[in-house]
Image (cartoon, rainbow, N blue to C red; front, side, top):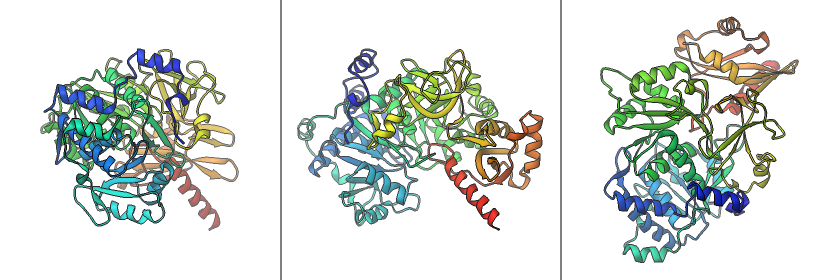
Length: 550
């Protein structure tokens, strides 16, 4: 299935987006080339061992694009890239796009059946990866899959060859730039499919979101406005650049602004703090836990992060205590909130111009030139203050789910808003507060209980680091509330009785009180910082079943 821009957007919408400057006729390679002309020797990106200037990115991308063409890559072919946060990821992505192919990024945490699903579903024919990273042999995994996925022709390995893979560096051919450009052929149009990025899979099997360069670039433009971003900024990138958050914020945002971007290959808060200070980082967009871990290692006597001006937390709510501590750490900086998803990158966000307290009380509002509604199950907008599905309409929305027209059609309301499955309320000023997931409601004896409400109360305790409330099956009531908590100190973890006593004191209804407590060392998370509640629901269902059988 080949999605086109007309499958999602009308000619009138396309014209309007281009008139506003949200969409452009320039390609990804055009943007790279423009930045290379203006600031050729400026380091665009750096990881712990390598640094790449804008001019080097342009030259390497073109040479590798020619190498891909010589290897038989054709327009529209899907190429998977599974790499950590290293500079070669961006070089590969730019080369793939310039060669007319479609990028299928895969986060390094994925293994076996998950990776096989991405390859089989997308129809990816080639892979760019590392021989080994973090003690895992990626090339060996892909080699084993070739017998089951006959379309998988070639495996390229970066930073060191290995049996069963060709060296990625060998793709970089010699030649005059003008001649190589002619050899590679026409650049990929910014309204053609640019990448297929897979959802985090918080509720079901991941779906492939097909974005054009223009839909992805729009998100970076919106962030530019919200952050007042400029060429003077230095981005901090611990979030995987092979997923939506990292792609938009650590690659496209600094790229379109001529800024610089620091990649963190393997997250460690101590090393992260040192790198942040060394490179005088100014901005970050990450899941909330990254900021929490950084706060845990912050020493005011040793760490000067006064150059930092904006940290945006996405993927989970920001506890008020975290915001207060972060503002003291950054002194002149601020903490902002963002709600996003792979389907449209940025749904709502608090900007640097908003009241700082909004980051604690809301998940932001629609950025300029986008529109957000709170809708009922039929797709109708509900009155302000009422709960409903947070639905988006704007220029950064994907063309659709790859090879899944039914799921694509199902997300849209009659008026063309894309429903997210996230529940929320909108205040009179347009600020949205996420209240849960449409499938994150616990129905106890016919009473709907918001998991988010319970989590907000429990998460306010000083002895709780992380919390997740999920439904557990009950023969009499249908469902009850089960609470998973990660305590600050496992030796002094609160009991269920202590937690419920506190909830009663806070005025929580008896029917909403958790009826089971599971103390764990960590919650299952996606690489983008979202709790995988479907795994917790499945786990507790098995435990309840085993308990009833014993």
